[in-house]
Image 1 (cartoon, rainbow, N blue to C red):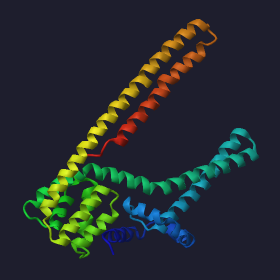
Image 2: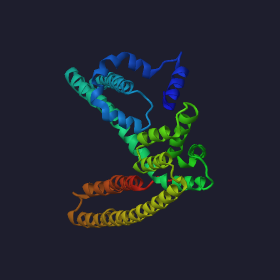
Image 3: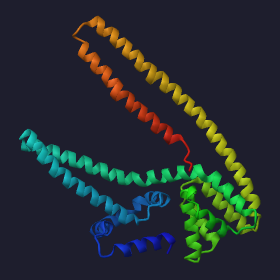
Image 4: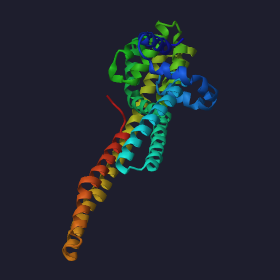
Amino acid sequence: MTATSIKSFNQEEQLKGSFNYVKFASDLFRPYVQPYMKYFSDFKVSMKKGDINMALDDYISVAVLTSIVVFVCMALSLSVIIIIITCNIFMSLFFSIFGAVFFSGLIFGFFYMYPGIRRDERKKKIDGLVPYATLYLTTLSGGGTPPIAMFRALAKFNEYGEISKEANKIVEEVDVLGIDILHALKNAAERTPSQQLMDLLWGMRTVELSGGDLRIYLREKSKTAMSQYKMILKMLQHKLSMIVEIYLTVVMIGSIMFMVLTAIMGSMGGTDMAGFIVGSQMAVVFLIIPIVSAGVILLIKGITPETN
């Protein structure tokens, strides 16, 4: 039993006596989804790296039940709405079933993609903090601190986010389950979505296993990590300047040119085109520019390393 299993067991104990949606879904659909678990082997890895503490068959059962509930609710609500608007039973039946299938498929697709989304989010957060965490571990190792004590100290700092959570899992496995530090490092390296953190943990395990100097390894590793982080920041600076130039040129200057040209066309075309031109200008100002600006903000957020 792992530390995650103990946490899940405690949560199940707390939920006894109250309605448990996960257990209800598992009791209904687990016998039907278990034969297909072999097709979800990669999916299970994504759940592990995404820190989703749920059995794979339970997760699929929840996805199936939620999709069915959404299908029923959407079919009933859409049929009532459409029949009130159109007074056509056939049209109501067709569009309600079509809409229900669409939304239930959308929900199941979300369940299918969610572990991958969680994995990528955790990877980004961890990668942005690995250089600082490595530097902190290097500082702790200077006094001859054993690895488990370093991870205990690291687990107490919430500033390191997901890395602190990984360190806490290592501490739980060693202190609660009695696993030795080498196996705990191996387990942590296998479940982390970050290649940088994986390399760090495997390296620490190798140094401990071979009897090497952990302080020297961490010092060199921190130098390498900070150098890579500086290169990432330089690349980010270049990308941001390019995005800003494109945004100013295409969106802002383009919008101004569009306003000027449509105003000239409106003065030449008379009153026939006035409504169309005003509508186009309002669409650009109140719809297109805000949407493009929001997209640029999301793009910048997506390429910016996570730091606390």
